[in-house]
Image 1 (cartoon, rainbow, N blue to C red):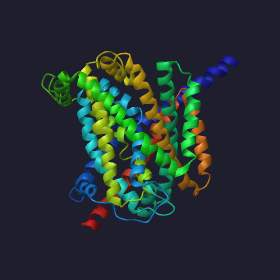
Image 2 (spheres, rainbow, N blue to C red):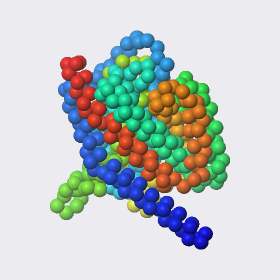
Image 3 (cartoon, rainbow, N blue to C red):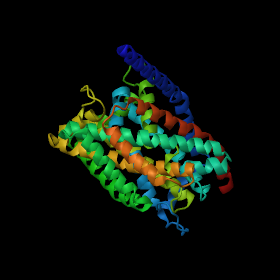
Image 4 (tube, helix red, strand yellow):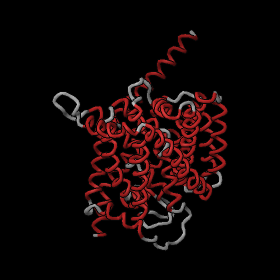
Amino acid sequence: MVKNAENCKKKGEFAMLDLLNALNQLLWGNGLLILLLGTGVFCLCCGKCRALRSFRLLLHKPEKRAKTHGLSAFAASTASLAAAMGTGNIAGVATALTIGGAGAIFWMWMAALAGMALIYAENYLGCKYRTEESCGAMAYLREGLGSRRLAGAFACCCVLASFGMGNMTQSNTMAQTLHAAFGMPELTTGLLAMFLTFAVLIGGTKRIGQFTQAAVPLLSAVYLLGAAFVIFQHREHLGEAFSSIFRDAFGFAEIGGGISGAAVSAGIRRGVFSNEAGLGSSSVLHGDADAEPERLGVYGMCEVILDTLVCCTVTALAILCTGVQDCGANGGVLVLEAFRCSMGAWADLFLPPVIALFALCTLIGWGYCGSKAFSYLTGGRYVNAFRLFFCIAACIGAVTQLELVWTLADIANAGMAYCNLPAILLLYPLECRKKG
């Protein structure tokens, strides 16, 4: 009887997981990818490419504005990078190469170009419509579209995504990486992630800004220098690496040519997931930053450049130049194999801590993003309680299996996109017409 009950319970769990996976595949089908890319291209063309013209703002000093209670513009940008530049930017690129070949990188670039315009639009709108009660996507859904329900739905999805993609999956990656490299127990890593995250988040906006401004540029520079060293050591293969990216993207190596469907799908998905353009999370992080809307939009575009066009590309070139893409490894292990080709045993001491620290930065960035969404839902109450529970979840994520968490996180991300994209399509053209 007991065994039968346990078997029934397991079957029920598997059935639920299968149902959620089917829902996830439906939500993240080609329709959403087309909507994301189409909205990005629309924003790029809207207002005669005013997003690209706004880059000139970087040459001028920011306007003097009233102080806000949020992050500074630079701190908001580093917090947004912290949330986006997680372990997926390293392991995810390797996965894209494994699935779609070198051509996937070309389509990742195309997704990034559309993402630049998309993230400009959502940051611009988030700042334009912000109020004392709301910022980011919640603001333009509530004030621009006049839909409190849609703003609330977005905030709920954002909170759920912060616990999934931005929390438990990151701490789990930290735990698995450090255990494989140094034999560190998963519970030890979980406790360490919990205390470090709590120490930053409990300090509020100021401490979060101080952490991201110090950690993200330094950590990114260290990783990029390491990857550049790998590429330099195998620089004779750099030309062939670029050739394979363009050749495989359009299937020139195949009989009769033709665009590779696997390369397109893998590259576009990786591009979307790497910079999170269209999900609305960037608009939340920039929503109450101390800068004018156009400048925040440009900062968002720069983040996509650094995140996808630089970091992801350098990772891909390190793999392609060393020729390890066909070794049978995948994810972070494939990147580690590439680093071993140049650094030898030192790669095992260099890359795992970098991956773990990237995961910690993502925890901090999404902790701030999730707390902003939670604050909107509760009218600013119980934010510290949310942060405490967020940190406890990081410890739990390090020691548990997360297949269900991954699925729920993907569903929540899709929910954010479905709430966010229609608002951009409706509101951004109106703002472009106002500006002329």
